[in-house]
Amino acid sequence: MYLIKPACCFLTGLLLLMPVGLNAAETKPNIVLIMADDVGSDAIGCYGGRSYPTPHIDALAKGGMKFNHGYAMPVCHPTRVCLMTGRYPFRFGKAGSTWGDYPSDAEGISIGNRMQQAGYATAVAGKWQLCMMKNDKQHPSRVGFDEWCLFGWHEGGRYHHPLIYQNGALRDDASSLYGPEVYADFLIDFMKRSHKAGKPFFAYYPMALCHDVTDDLKNEHVAYYKYGRWMTYAEMMASMDDMVGKVVASLNEMGVRDNTLIIFTTDNGTPGASYLTVNENGKMVRPKVVSVQNDKIVPGGKGKLDDTGTRVPLIANLPGHIKAGT
Picture 1 (cartoon, rainbow, N blue to C red):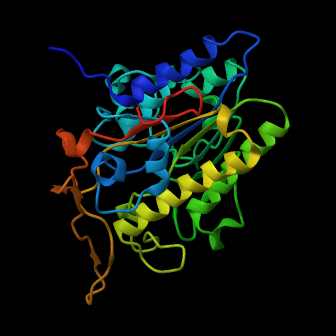
Picture 2 (cartoon, rainbow, N blue to C red; picture 1 turned 60 degrees about the vertical axis):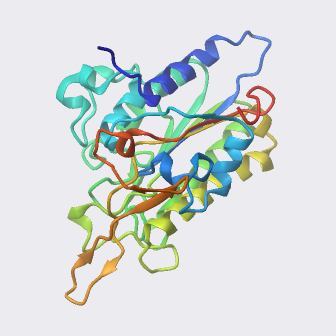
């Protein structure tokens, strides 16, 4: 019997080894780690997905390396603990798999901590879920991030009227903004400032998209599209890909694209259902999410232990270092 090493553990080990392998004469690469929410490999075009447009993600794969056997935990929180620590969540007992918890003995050894020790400026923007932000506003700092812009998980919206904590304080201007754009803009600003200061950056982007709103907030914070109406899963996928493209475009504009490793992955498989609208009785309707992959119909399997719940995209792109199309 053996354990399959999830993509999140592999990524953590890879990223931690990169700065060590550089000598003083070499320039440390910037690193942008993107983790979309609730997106299986079946939903991505370069993996045979036919249901949703993902041109920006597909371009990263075409210009870099696409891993065909990327796996995550079947639900989000254990994957995030795994990514932050490089260890299986069960190694930490209950704290490794309990929503809103983070192992106290993992503070100081996270990927953020290690990147700081390697001389990187660090930031995280989007979804945290490793604590209740209202109870521990400085938690990202202890886990190795110099700056952060995160929505209050189970406290308020992530999309329309987002409730956002930025560097330990609640933002008072976010209620009129579209959450995913706030997180992307924050990260882009961080990268620009770090580059201007001559410091390599590690930008962790755990996206809010494409998760629907949590049940305890559904009556107030439905997953609105940025133009004011409810989003289908397909529209959230398109918006997610747009945000990836926005981040990549900013790196090109800064002139640092050739020295920036971009890694794209997700936390678990595609969900089995997603909020769409309200029916005539005022009840939320959750239509099933079914994708087409290589001409096969694939029902969303988040939470399941088969490929529909655990197989995720994993793409690495670093021009001049990672061979295109591999």
